Length: 113
Image 1 (tube, rainbow, N blue to C red):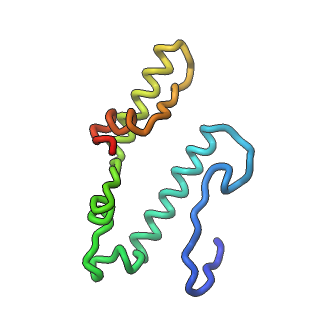
Image 2 (image 1 turned 60 degrees about the vertical axis):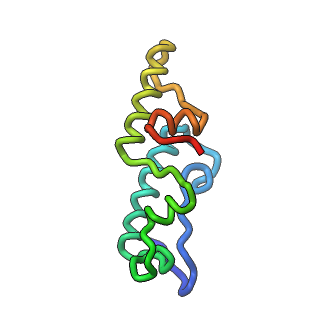
Image 3 (image 1 turned 135 degrees about the vertical axis):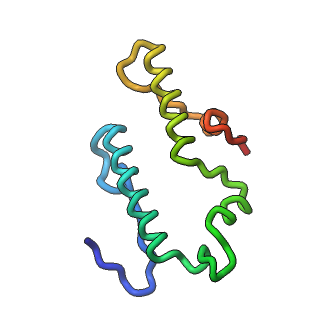
């Protein structure tokens, strides 16, 4: 576990930004899952002042104000299943990535902004 310097915000890295250009996409996805869990746990344990309810802002309200389409775990599951179906339809043993954000948001039942 790394120590934080007083007054500095933590930096969360995953994939190649974390460990350099090595590994495959699947490894980066596992890394991203782990990093997002740490980030969320840290946010719950010690939310930044600008996101705290004491400041009158909820994180989801902030995202809404900024027109950010936040995705739930269920939204990501729909996207992932669509990618798997695309891979099967193409005769591939793995999923076929959806690379356009607008397509992902449509699958997640969110409007593309």
